[in-house]
Image 1 (tube, helix red, strand yellow):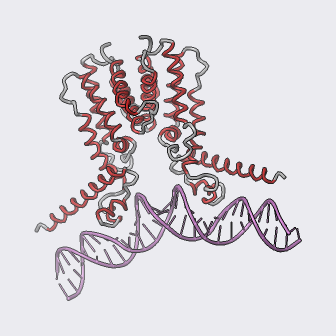
Image 2 (cartoon, chains in turn red, brown, orange, yellow; image 1 turned 180 degrees about the horizontal axis):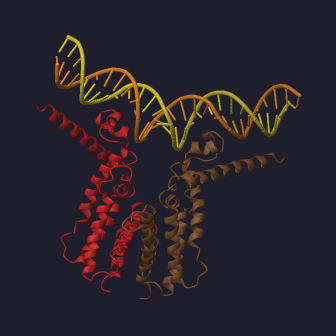
Image 3 (tube, chains in turn cyan, yellow, brown, red; image 1 turned 120 degrees about the horizontal axis):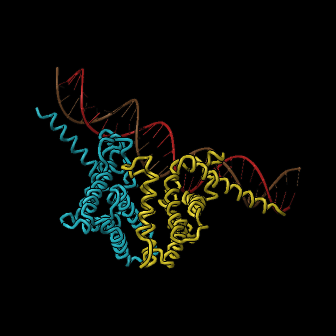
Length: 202
Length: 202
DNA sequence: CTATTTTTATAAACACTGTTTAAATAATAA
DNA sequence: TTATTATTTAAACAGTGTTTATAAAAATAG
């Protein structure tokens, strides 16, 4: 009889409901305001209920990061159709920074939290996925002699540091010396200058 | 009569005691563990007491940042005696990153918190002080034709983004693809590569 | 030196947080 | 319908920042 199956389906449905609600609240009010009681209240269950579906809040954070990563990944793959490696890498950089600047709380959730050390250490965190995407792009750019020749790891760290730095500063509008209406232009100029500086051969 | 004076002195002494205790706890266990009750407990006063000396926890954070900034400032001025602008800027960068890597919770306190929007907006935050120091160094390096010619603001953003990025990633050991014993060397190589790329004239 | 006023300190409470436990309710099987 | 099992929650624990009303201490005035 399908009783067991139905129960399993219902369980999964409730789990999804919890996650979707958590995601909604996060998108509305940020991670700080996404409390267990908050989620429970909106789906009209008790807070204790949630602990029957998730080990702790960290596990919810983990799934939230996965969802947010989908948005991020979509954004930075916007120009994946392009052929020229160097231009494609530059476009990726633009998209990366643009995402962080216009979705600060999403970027923060993705890179300022580490729910992995404690739980679910088998899974590759979104951070790692971003990293390997970046790595691939840089590798093929170097292979085509369109990026300064250097150990791959160094190039990855160099580019990622810059992108993460510019994103972090933009997120909280810490470059307050740049007028707001020139901000987008400023970011663009920075990215271009950075990559053009590491362009080309030997 | 000096009663009023003595009272004022005692008040200031207690205020300092609170701040020093907060600083100690922060250095021992990080900002998370530095709670009002925690501070109050150690100086053997009630938590409510602290609110007679500080408006809220943010005001304590503000003073903590000032103290931490002193450490940071000392570190990044380590090589201020040097004469060659470019080398000095590079040394500053090394010191900057080294501080962040070896004092993650201090760097975090300095750049990941903003107690200014709400309170004490007259004072220049440590962040701004770091920024102007960086600006000065870059300006004179450009003036001596030792840095790629570009608008000062762009150069500042470029350098600061890179330094903040590399620091943020190092802080939480997010460049996990680099073995731990090669880490210091890796950071050094990155900084050298970055600055050498923006070295010299036109 | 007492009495009054002023200052100083705190206990207790409020509104939150994540999390656990034991008890109550609802669904299923006999 | 009763017994068993699965589901759900109320209540509590140990924290957090912060406020308020009250008590204790100290300074001042008579």
